[in-house]
Length: 107
Image 1: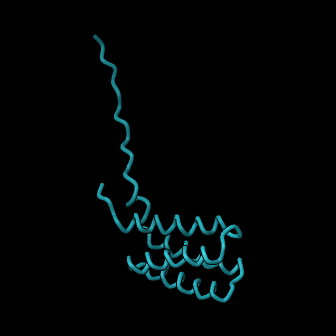
Image 2: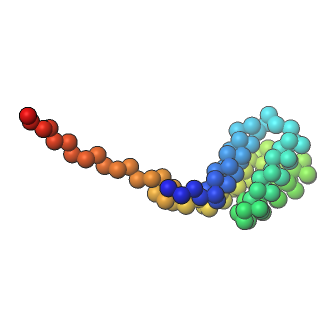
Image 3: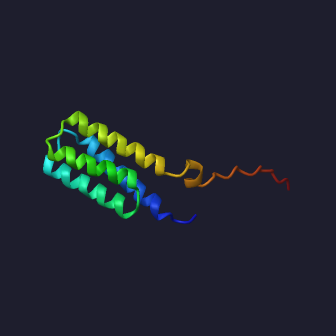
């Protein structure tokens, strides 16, 4: 199976977004701003524009002292945007071969 670099990038973005969502309330605003900036940078570098645009908007919200509920809604929207970029699951996972029928040999 060929390695798809975009799939690795999308998985990394998804991990970052889910990590931020899991840490809500336990991460400082400057660190949150840095993490969102990294997400924006990666998304723009690999042309995942929907995620990059949402991250840029979230950065603006953070600079205006955004509320937790607003931040979570942006993280949810980024997660949705990432999952729409993912190829269908059957294109990612290899098909599991069906086991062959075993016949007992008699000696």
